[in-house]
Length: 203
Image 1 (cartoon, rainbow, N blue to C red):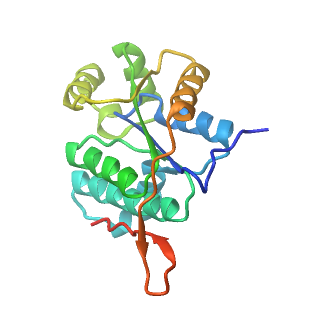
Image 2 (spheres, rainbow, N blue to C red):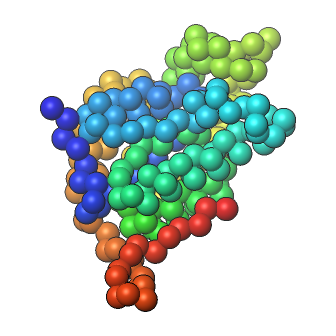
């Protein structure tokens, strides 16, 4: 039986981020199975709502990531944990995820997925037909540019290499999560003396 994260006392925000083809969805699925937590994924948003998003390719991804922020905020607002499978390549988006966790007093574990073997990374992308990279005349160069364009992460977090078995990273991520203390809650006093959690606004 999965061991669920305590929903009411300390919700968790597990951000599985990285460039395409680095094993984000595989790891997110393994974490979902281990803790019985919902996953919201960038790929699902793009597949289902692309017609309602801006036509520019980079604008579509950015708009989809903003929608993921909104969905995660709704989940955390109820005191429930969530796993987010996304790219989070923009520095501003990374800061937004951290702010979201702070505002809801959620335990935040960013997991940066990488693939240290360029040939394996290229094979993953080509096998899944990943957009312009998979259809490029020179896939090796396209993947090299993709890897170089992804900005490095700074601060605390977990690094997951796609060359390792997912179970290795699942154990590591859950160990980090379980060792984190429950953050203090933020409450606002209402006119009837009832305390409610302060809402967050995601723009």
